[in-house]
Amino acid sequence: MAAAEPGRGSPVPGRCAYFVERKKRFCKMIPASGRRFCGEHGQQEEENDRKRIPCPLDPKHTVYEDQLQKHLKKCNSREKPKPVYFVQDINAGLKDVAEIPEKQVPISSLSKEELENLIIKLKKASNGLELCLKERILSHQALQEALNDPKNGESAFKHLKQQASILGNMEKLHLLGPGRCFVEFGAGRGKLSHWVDVALQNVENVQFLLVERATTRFKVDGKHKRRDSIFERLQVDIQHLCLNLALRCLVESYTACCDGENEQPAPKRSRTDMTEVASNNSADNEGNKEESKPVAGIVIALCCHHKCDWTHYVGREFFKSVGLGPVEFHYFQRMSSWATCGLQETTTKAYTSEESEDQTNDTEEHEQTFSKTESGSDTLQGILTVEERKEIGCLCKRLIDHGRIEYLQQRGYKAVLQYYIESAVSLENVLLTAVPSPSLIPEPTHV
Image (cartoon, rainbow, N blue to C red; front, side, top):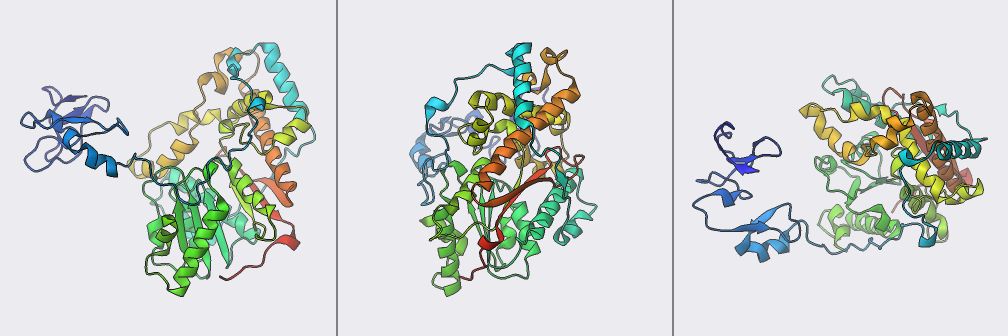
């Protein structure tokens, strides 16, 4: 990066005159009155004798040296007090480190015989599993207006179709109704909870708990400030989330709101005190039936199997029952990317400015970061065709998913996999739904 130099054009009037070499453009920040550079690039100001240094908490940004102590107290990268629902590694999974294999070699380094043996094990373990899933592509009236809005681009339309089908499946399972608390893991901007709220706009006693570990821009939470429903957002990794404590905070907030004991907005009060963990966190609430009622339903749009980890995987017992272990799991989760590796060209292309903001969070979380060697490099040509790789990738996904199904079934849930959207909309088009047996479904309660 460098200051403005001849031959680079001129900065936009009223904007910083610093040229960002990496982005091949001038900084867009607005400098103080009478200055040519913004605060971040103020060291370029010849008449400015104040020194800027990298922030010791996060060297990605700088701060005036004489204001360092003041900055450290409010820097967004400072360590913040842990909320009451934060319990270190409560959902971390496997504790026996001896069972975790040492670092494995990449698939491209495997010999032809080793790869063929893995595929034989995969097909043997998958034999007898229900691989032909039923289609349950539904929609919901709450999204019809948005689906028919021509202003929505192609990317937004695809997201809306997926959300509409998820809502349709939730309605079919009788999960949309009064007296419910909806917990959305990996909530992002909170769009799914938003549409559930729209679908239940005439329903009383509804709470939403949105869990997202990342700092999210362009959240839709603000649209619900005047609604009777309670929205609470928790910025925490699910690995450290004690769901029982989080729900207790939400109930206390809702109770205080109803009783008028506190004038502070309910979503703020409880703060003062990637799929694997979602099913684990939800199903394990069955542990103490005297204090808790079974979860009314679980709905997970499955994706990113290549990000799975043996430590967190809930289907370890199933894998062991079919003669597989952590080594095979490592390779199967990498090979699962073969099912969707054809999406790479489309997922990495540039989007229009209107669509890019809606795409940003999904791209960060769901972009497939596997290397070329994992997604089908030239080294695999002559062993497997593109179609064979795709078929094997799908088989890996279904095997991993079946372990999740068995885990939920062992805890009294009726769990099902189905296609919830066309593959033309998304190749990650499988939905896992689970509900307890009818006799265990709790009646809606009013606090």
